[in-house]
Image (tube, rainbow, N blue to C red; front, side, top):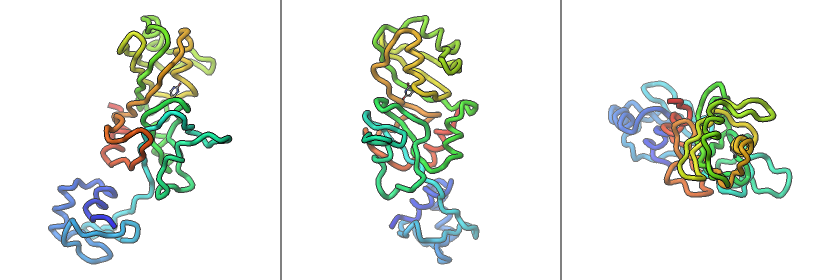
Length: 234
Ligand code: URA
């Protein structure tokens, strides 16, 4: 059972303040009965909600944020490997849940797990220009050559990469911003300069930074505001 104001803030784009107002004006109905107070609790999977006479469509998809730990694969495992789906609480497990984009087994950080293929495509397709930012540590000092090379487009054996931003944050550490996601892309890009990636951690997708409240290995539903940020290309 959940408070009706919480259900509505999860399932609609109304703000908490607007929801309070709608309830006080008696414009929210649950199973055709007027909701009197925002604290009233309902089973969000078994009710019909109407706002100003219009039925609110129940959320059709799940959008889960994960702070991926090292040691988990983000594909379906063909061997004994643990997969990121193993970290998802049972109540979210549907047949179609999948990670939107891949992180290598040893890569950590922000991932979206969803059952919404269109949303996933919208944040991953290179044409959509949604950026992903990674903290990267390599085994040799970062050179000017690397910075210029990343900007001009590193040539990999499966084609030339789009321009990427390499910002030095220390002798060996950097932030790398990509707008595409090829197989082992950052490792292969640095590999072209004779460097080995030692640490790779995704901190941002779109405008959404890894939330502070999401501990390593934790999964929680994204808020509407977070989903907007995920799709933002400011
Ligand atoms: N680039 C890589 O090489 N690996 C990742 O997991 C993500 C980006």
